[in-house]
Image (cartoon, rainbow, N blue to C red; front, side):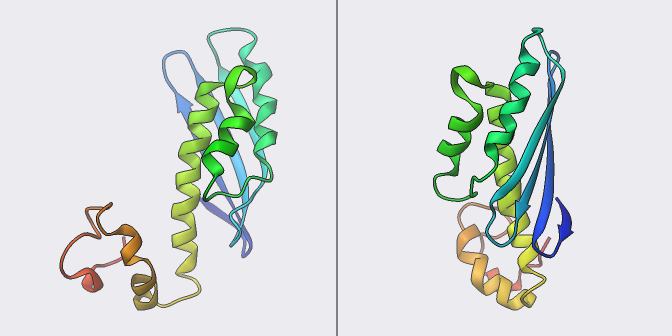
Length: 140
């Protein structure tokens, strides 16, 4: 995640295996977490028609990351007019966007406020945040 300004950030991801090299970049508004632009580059693909799908990444624009975004991402870049690998990459990047939100919140609140507001979200789903002394955990 790279901050562009105080109201937006950029995330970049790459899908890489022996047949593919796909890069995806998304610009995201903060605090809305809306994708404001997205573009993909298919640097290596197994078939010559695969790069035709990279323009579909622009359909990610307008998607708000949160409830319902999984389905919206799948509809935008998946199914028979899309690419399963581009879809997986975009879904993984949605998780990065959520993590970036928590990182950016630290600009606006103290560490103690952040811990009080977010500990319940992470307890029972993250090893670091699960335990008996949650308020004594250090931010990583």
